[in-house]
Image (cartoon, rainbow, N blue to C red; front, side, top):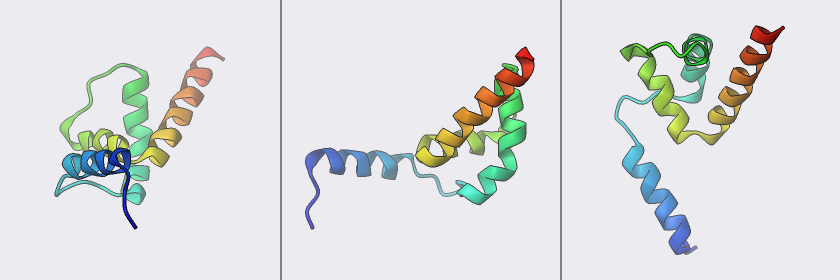
Length: 79
């Protein structure tokens, strides 16, 4: 199996973004509610929750879930 130049660039991007102390999807779910509340209210994100932000850079599935969570929080504020 050979990779196209675009696939190689995408793979290299993820390799460069990988951190030795990153969290997985299951761990991210534990951080998600608190992180979303801070982001929705535009408050600074403390260091322990930075891992949640970093995970979203690497995981499109969790990033999509996070966008949906933020939308739900915004709708809840309006009503």
